[in-house]
Length: 205
Image (cartoon, rainbow, N blue to C red; front, side, top):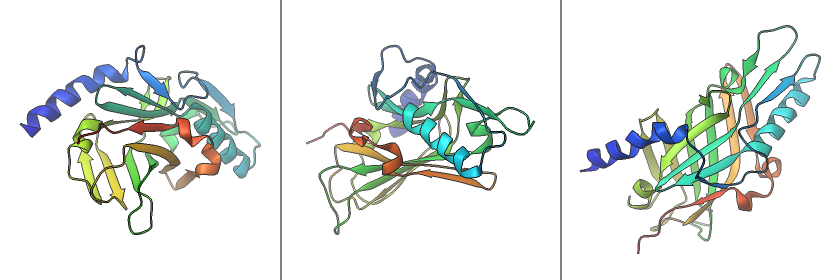
């Protein structure tokens, strides 16, 4: 039965990644579907990183439909010093979104969720796309540990400081990009206004 449910979930993911017209969107300060180009030539390394952080913070969004949640930020391309045009995911091969659970504390620490996957791009529309099945999480026993999903591409979920029930609301508190020896990390100060960057798990009494 579990395998059949997973098949039904992932069968619709590919279609949904290309469809966004009726999605409920949260956390959108600028449309993630806006393609942006940056010229990093003669720009100091710290300025390049600040520009990338600002782009992600402005375009990050969460889309929910049914029992699925999609995390993503806007596509961007950049050039520097005569090199070939690059995109974010061509430089940073892995993306992690870090969330904090609301209304609970376990051993004095707030619940944390890290969602990690390969950095994927939807054409020139969005980057860092990750889909998670909300119902599958909500119906699993609450607690610390890992969950893994392998379709449409491998995604790892790591939970820390979770008690005997799942927090309903999870707020974005960080974004991490890494690959090719490069690393960029956004914290809560970089993201700002985290209250509108959240998703809810289904409630099962």
